Image 1 (tube, rainbow, N blue to C red):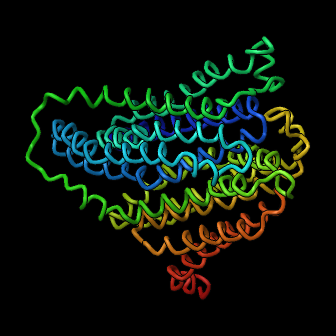
Image 2 (cartoon, rainbow, N blue to C red; image 1 turned 90 degrees about the horizontal axis):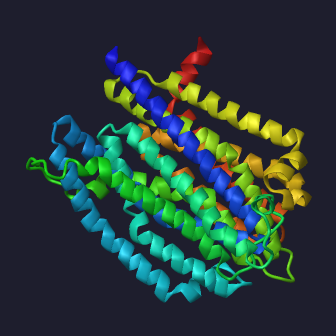
Image 3 (cartoon, rainbow, N blue to C red; image 1 turned 180 degrees about the vertical axis):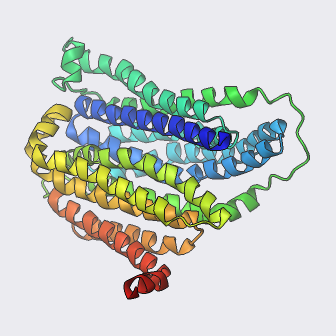
Length: 450
């Protein structure tokens, strides 16, 4: 009974921290949306998408670190956790350094690919992204160690510090840029009445996220660092074996991140003055995407809790369909509530959250439908991963490739891109449903025959 209570309390702490951090991240995106003009906000969204795609496979290192740290924790080998941190950091840090050099040396071509309008501003943002990758790739390792060592409260606080840091630092950095010429009040800035008109605007917005992650990285060292002086047992930490063990997880992270973010990148890429999709339209698309991601912020923690529960039940040989059903109903309920609220008052919602974009409120519901489908795709992907059914990669790969191809072929307007992304998400979801039916065919057939 004590173990169950401990599991539930730890789950509650981590989920509460994840939800609060998600809310702060959502708030930061809304803040940046109010401070930047549409074209710059589209650039910000595209560059953050690039960060997420690059970080997705490396981000799966958190799962690897958690697994091996949990092994050390179970063996009462606290010194081994510190040794694991040193070995994984030594292997991953050079990758961050190489990525930084790559982003600096090729900042111009990368900026030219992403933006057709203000290449100078985008180039500065690209360099800041590269600088952030120096240590942002290490943060998942630290968090994985906290997770594996059952330091769930520290992990929750770390997530909150990361998100809160970018909100505070973003306002601290960007407020002076917005008021340098006008001397506008903080209230005017927060209401979106004053925009940042500076070539460093995008770089500043990204810089705040980088600094927030830096604070989180340093903070994560404190709880693990207390084991630095403890002796470690002899054990193997072969990173190649770790990566071989986790390659399906790496690919799943990559494909789900592509499905989540590549549309914003490509819309910015194809936005061009004088065409059907302008830089301003790209900003409108990025704004609608930010607002609709509320579904993902709400349903994501549900999937986070479901994954270890099903993994544990599978390991014990117990039935797990009830957990899947509860998670499925919860995701559908949360998504439906958001979609319902947005459907009833789209203009009111946008007027309060992104007041400069009320003219595209009619597209809020179609955009939100995308994330309803994505929430279900994410649920099924994690479900099959917990079962170690790696065919999950097929619908994810098909959906990702289809989304990229459709946007490249059809991008004449924001509405058209939304349709293309919706089709890709539906295809991925249909693939998972068919896979599940095939896997459970005998059970379903028996149930109907009863």
